[in-house]
Amino acid sequence: MNYYTLLQHGASRQPEKLFLVVDGEEWSYQRFLRLVRQLTGQLAERLPQGLAGADVLLLADTFAGQLAGFLALQAVKMRPILLHHGLSPGEVQEILRENRLQGLLTLSVKSDKSAFDQSKFDLSWEENACERVRHEAPDILGVLSSGTTGAPKVMYRTYESWAGFFPVQNSIFHVGHDSRLFLQGSLSFTGNLNSLLAVLYEGGSIITSETMHCRRWGKLIRGWAVDVIYLIPTKLQLLAAALKEPLPDVQSLFTGSQLLSARNICDLQRLLPQAQLLLYYGASELNYISYAICADPGRDSRNLGRPFPGIGVTVHDGLIYVDTPYHVSGAKIPFTVKDTGYLNEKGELIFEGRRDAWVNKGGVKISILRVENELQAVVGIREAVVLPCADKLRGSTLAAFIVRDEGAEESALRRAIRKSLKPVEVPSVLCFLSQMPLNDRGKVNRRALREKLENYLTISENNSKISVS
Image (cartoon, rainbow, N blue to C red):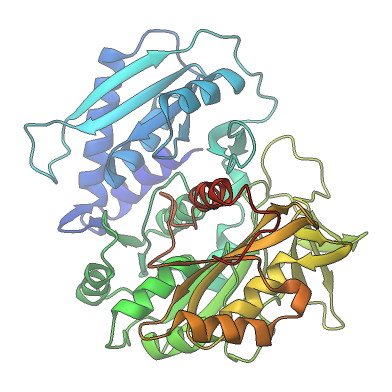
């Protein structure tokens, strides 16, 4: 069983039902199956023989192209691995080499076609001659790690490692046969891919946009009667800031990858007055781990709720360990991604950040997560991201990147920051931005922020002490 087979079943049972809307273009289950079959025909014509069972990196320039390519490769018995956008050719080659992949398949819409007519793709194939990875499990797809250090690693999944949990997660997230779910961004982000496949599993509908225009998202959500939303908090902040009128038809919102502040919850309750707000905790190596219903803006933002049914969570030496059958192939259970935290008296998971998300500043250990949370609670600060940086006097210190509310003055925010934090926690570098840089998965682009920080430190390298920017 794979997800191409799932699409076939959906098209057989409900051929004319809406499957996918991308901005102005819509596909029924049957129409999208025809698109995938057309692409499998192109693959048969263009790809070398003997690639059955191959692990293939896939890069597509459109959302529909990503999904069609992903399903078409499964149809021809290959394992697709969706590639992040924005990587350099050298980085792509490193992924191919380090993960022993058989090649890179690139799909783009033919230049003589309209923006939405994807019945034919331009297709290119770059072979990578190497010894194949031996798969002990019946893997059908791969996902990329975030690649914060070194080349992103490919992690493989069986069909059951996600689909086996869909009945549980869909019940909690209120995803069903009649659901119309809105998501946005690249399918190389496992949260997006998992959510889409969970809707396909139920026979529901997906609504999305290729653009980062939040007002367009609002029109799509209203126009297509969306009742479930999956967006990560950075995008939810943008959506809430852009839309003045509420979206009363939305009944459920689930989000993860970042925490929700009190302000985030208040903004979302205004925007989605009828929706249940669910914050989940998960990991690419595992799956969904715990979830919390966020009804009270005054709740502890670190509280990630109780484990999902059937999932075990324990804490040893401050590290969170997860016991689950729904994990990437080869993971040793119980598994930890080096996140720290503890279980409170109610059995709820309190998240304290990654083990390496601490700074030793002159002998004082400082939690980056705590500083970020305190900054986001300051009136006038819309977003805050904190990074560690070197300090010639104290070894390590903090740098904070701030997006302020319209009308908030930098001088007033500097004073408020000094009042809200302990003196040792006050960032040595403050950088005010008009907006946070995001990657193609919608997450804060910390690499871009580190480059900004390095540029600033280079300018300041002759100073004996880092000064506030």
